[in-house]
Structure formats: structure tokens, C-alpha cells
Image 1: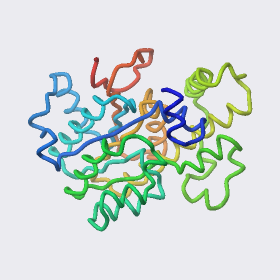
Image 2 (image 1 turned 90 degrees about the vertical axis):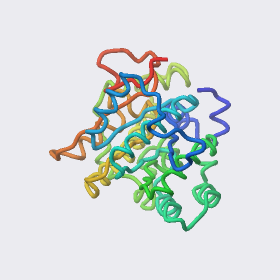
Image 3 (image 1 turned 45 degrees about the vertical axis):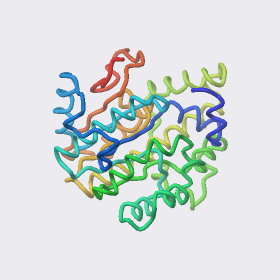
Length: 296
């Protein structure tokens, strides 16, 4: 992550430090001329074995590195293969914030154009990565009438919590996030990993500093908001397979989104799998994900 990129995104530094560790997504298959079909996907034997495992999961997390182009290509191939196996696929997208859901619905229904989708969701301001990278995915979803799920927390809310804490939220803010008492800070290993990232970018802050506490709370809120949206969809649409496109920091070790989705699903018959699209030296016990897609 570089500081210039943070400034370009226009979000508060607290938000961006985490965000830049996170994700990207592409996928598609509606554009036959520019995208490979499943049959053309060059899966290795190990990747083919991984795909067989993914086909049994209710929720699949594809954790990626934002600026790694290969991750986008791999996500595309994986989603194509899953769609060909069973077309009831929903794509949960971190790059769209929850208030954008009606806009995504109108786009998939053919009521607005790609340009209008980009403008109405304020994509460039709220996400900030290259719009063109996402066009194949969006066209694929629209052509095949796939459900797109906006899962991210509104930027204004995350920034406010990072700067002022949960007590600063208003009633209007609360409509886009889970109940405050569902924000679970109990995973000390997750806290330690976030602290390490915070200190890397902000200097050696005291472990008990108020600024870090708010930073960590903003991260938890971010994860809980996305987890709530995913879990609610799975409960309402159990016949769908949900593919979650999110940054690796939301996925690794299951600490971010996956554990919080599982908690919300309770005793439901439910399976989920995590995939890190690249190996970035995360090989510390326990295993960082169910699968590492690419070793390059």
C-alpha cells in the first residue's frame, strides 16, 4: 500500500490503511470476445481439486490484493466455473456500499446504464480503483441476471467511528450497520494483527491508545456490516451460492468476515470456504485460509 493511493481514494487515513490491504474483483462471462470461458480456464490439477471443494460451499470468500491484476483474472475464472456448475450464484461486493443496493438492482434489471451505475453509486469517490476492471463482472451479472449484493459500510460511517467512536453515530447512520451490541471485539489475535498494521503505517502507537481503539472498532464495524448482509442473504436465499469478493485482510484466518457470518448463522446447516488468491507469506499457524489459489 502506498500513501499516494490513500490520498487518491479520498477516504480518511484510518479507513484507507485497512482498505488498501483488502480487495478487488472482476469476473464475467457475458463478454465472450474478451473473457475466457470455463472450458478455457487453465486450472492446474490443484486448482481443479479446489474447485470441486468450492462447489460444495454455501459461501465462498475470494480474498485478494487490490493492485494485483492476476487476482482479478483468477476471480473471473472461478466465478465462471461456479456459475457453469450451478447458475444460482450471488456476488457480494465490498466495493459497493450498502446504500447502493437499489442502484445495483436497477442496473441488473436493465433500468440504468453502466455509466449511470458508476455515477449514482459514486464509485470513483467511494471505491477509487479502476472502474474498467469491474465492467466485465457487472456485464456478466447483468446479462445473466445474477444478484449483486452491496455489502460495504458507508465511508462516512467508518470514518466517523475511526475518528470519534461508536458514540458519534446518529439514528440515520444506524440503519446501514448491525446493532452495536453485535460488534464482537473478543478475538485478540485479530486485534493484534490490526495493531501491527496500524503501527506499520502510523508509528508505534501505545497498545492502549484511544486512537487505535477507534481504529480497531472501525475495522470491526466494517467486518460486522459485511457479515450481516451476507448472513441475511444466505438465510433468505438458501438455494444460492454466495461468492464474496473482498480484500484478503477481511478473509485471512477467518477473523474478519467469515467468523462473523458463521456466528450469525448459528446452528444452520451451512458451509463456507476461504480462498486467498495469492501467497504473500502468510504461512503462519494456523493455516491462513482453506485454500491458496496461486503460489506465484
